[in-house]
Image (cartoon, one colour):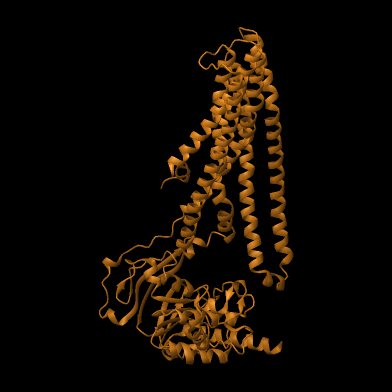
Length: 593
């Protein structure tokens, strides 16, 4: 893969070259200003110019020349900055789009080791930081480099003195600034890393603030956040201190340059110094070279800072999903596959060297209602996510309605499914938009939305939605109960029809009466012709399904109806007893309260 640094440098190369050319023109024009000033003063004082390649008869010509050189130099400098900012914005758009696509592409098991705060930090800090090379480093480097290269030659040409004293001083100052800038870059890198860690902690705290408060963990989280902030502050103090040292050195450079340049003229010049030459020397050294040397430490700082952001983005972009091995050619298909909505053989999933799913095989008929049950950690949810290609699961073969799901796109695979997680996603929008999952949905679709809510047992007249479909639902559904969020999720998947329903314990927060109505009107009613896989811990659902898949430690160890499993499987009987006891204990606890 091409490195991001190479991409930043060579993407739209013509624009990068234009920036450099504009900066070079600005530097040349900037040096012509003191030349015209020198010639003007020397002509007024009657001193004959030693430079015969440019001669004018009128002193006014030199004044006009100096004015326009300075004016045009500033204009090309501003043009350089404008073009650099434009290129930076273009690359920010490229990197942001790539970051979005990458995040969208990464699977659940791949993302498990990356906190949300890290992704937020990449968007908020590193996308902009990576393009600092264009809007800061490139123009600053060009406006620093060309004057530093041209100025010694201009001084030597104008005053007939050797180059080495000025060049030696410039090299010494450049080495010192490089050292301080490299040190500053470390502080910048730590600043980004610590900020990302703090954002992750704050994000976790905000997302779970009510639970944290209820469980009296507030002080623990505050302590972690404050501790991280203290480390971050100390690093920032060191960063500011080092920056002030760089600024102090940069502002005092002009004095040393003036001293060395004047000493060089006194000791090495072969003629008497004229007033025009003195003015030109002070202009070149005291004015023209001031900005480049002041920019030098920050040029290196921004360059190193941009490099760290590029490395962080590159590391994220290089993250790969667990590969899915295609071994369908070695496994024959079962006969009569046209009657099946879903067929899987040899599904295996390993996450962080831990086997989550082991040789899972499924044959789900069209319109069949199947429950998936088992103890917590048995792999039920990961099974559903693997079917959605949200993990790096391996399949011997995987077929949807007779199609080889391993040879079609992920989007086409997911188009066969409707998925309802236990904690449904609620966006900060109206109830109408949350059901339709479309912003600014047309009002003529309201009957479809209302019908979906009705089947999901979400009654607009009795629920706490004073404005009906126009009710604003807060971020993450903060003004909805757990049961309401689950029912909105069910209404959403009904609104968006799909042949196979993956229901991940989506009835856990509804009461018994609501569950009964959901089964009658939705799961066994409106969805009677759809294929349904329901992960559940509710025993009341098991008599209503066509078949039960009983999982243990990532494997399907038995399959059959509720009565069949009770009759022949001791582990299943123990599981149902355990679930029934847990439900009774919870009911007793609620009754006691």
